[in-house]
Length: 135
Image (tube, rainbow, N blue to C red; front, top):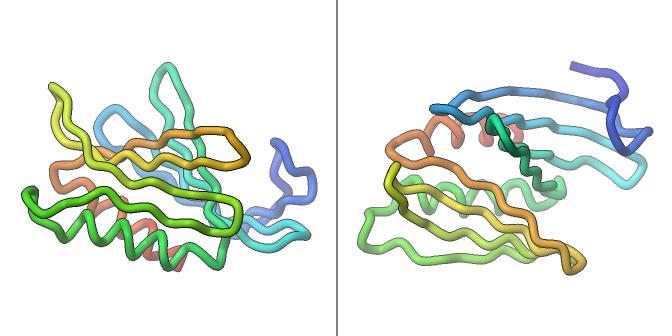
């Protein structure tokens, strides 16, 4: 989909948009471009909240590599990882609650902390396929 985005950046152009529903959550994957370059915007929306992280274009392949690490790892040998891209640091952590396991991606950027959680139980693979399209 092409066109100007209606929220925020003003000069941002949508190059590709995909939506994925996993259980009760919606994930939006938007490849956009502005005068500073291309980037991938990943949003997680539940009935009550919306969380968004921005991955610079030059870091999408590294982000995908780390995501693959969690998709392809056994439960016993999964470790927290971090990815630094310019002034952003992404933290990848596996957690668990009464609903099951999940991957939590935390973005630390200019002292702001943003969280995005992906659910587990083989649903990583669906999200992985979506991320691979942006690579």
